[in-house]
Image 1 (tube, rainbow, N blue to C red):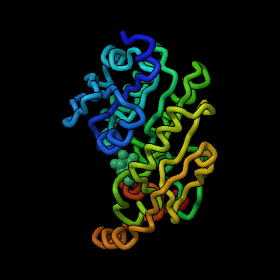
Image 2 (cartoon, rainbow, N blue to C red):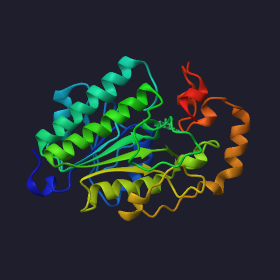
Image 3 (cartoon, helix red, strand yellow):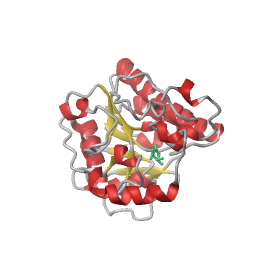
Image 4 (cartoon, protein in one colour):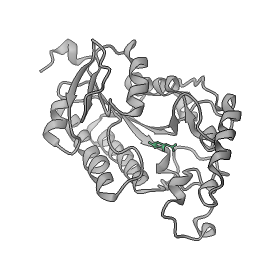
Length: 277
Ligand code: 15L
């Protein structure tokens, strides 16, 4: 069991071996040395100050071990895209519950939850939305992220854990296509949001959009700005690249109308007008 001093700064990062984990860990390291990394597989490039605890989110005993003695948890683990129901159920619903419950039992004070734009993906692109809108998931994956946000609200209200849900757009060095010009976030800006979740004294329960300073945004992220978020990434700087990539993809008559893109058009059997773009 970690001693009192270690506990005061022990941060556990689930999903540490995943794409986002790999991008943000080096940027977090300066401010938060000694991260405890957790995943099913050990990340390949462990820093000398990092430790690794193997955990499968579907195993409550393993999750409890991973969060033991933690002050804060960055919950980025789980299934990171659309998938068969059982995969999403196990990793993102059972797994997310196991994480929040283990954190409560371990006395964790703060959780930053990697939610997704796909919790609200069926909003039309022409509409600008805030963080207070009804969820409109575009996939089983999106439903699981809305579940995680609801679980975060419960553990905040009932147990006093300071929970920050980041509805992440798309993280990377630059936007991949035209849709991502609206939702892209640089790794550096994502780290700013994580730091708000870890440190801001006003956080009780927050939903913030994980997006850089994108001129084509669909999201009102004023709450994040009130909490001190000052994004520096600008998707427009990469417009030529995004448009060139988009030209290779071609049109998607359903996905192009909605914020969630291909997550909306996949398995779509509705009438587009009825879905309300
Ligand atoms: C997500 O939530 C996924 O994790 C990521 O793989 C991308 O698909 C991203 O959304 C996106 O919408 O671009």
